[in-house]
Length: 142
Image 1 (tube, rainbow, N blue to C red):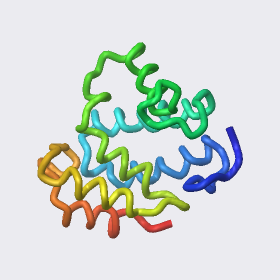
Image 2: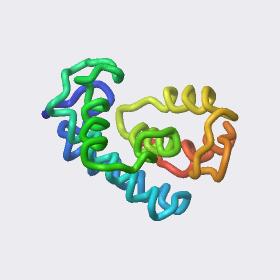
Image 3: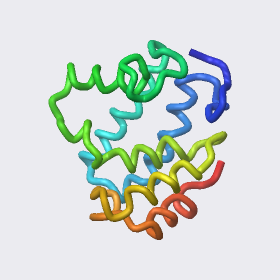
Image 4: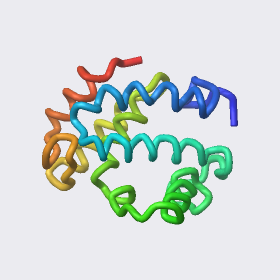
């Protein structure tokens, strides 16, 4: 699957993965080694499913790239942490801080989960200020 599109000016899935892997490296110090490797697996699985996905399918549609990736991982991996909220905020930061993507959806997400979702990336409940610092100071705006 190629061609630049909204939020993905990098043109190919391979180029998108190459762009988001450095974001994961920036967050690596906030992650356990196990979570780092889980996120790396999620990055590659989720984005590799885009070629088989139905374009424009909502995330809950079984033919969306996220649903296809989840089904693949459920078939080949028994790790429940790959399917819960623990890694989702970190994945959202890694995937959402790329060229062509607005940071506003990330700010919205973190406002919505503040005080409701626990994650290891910040050592407990998210605070909006901690997430703002991660988004605006740790990851370069591209």
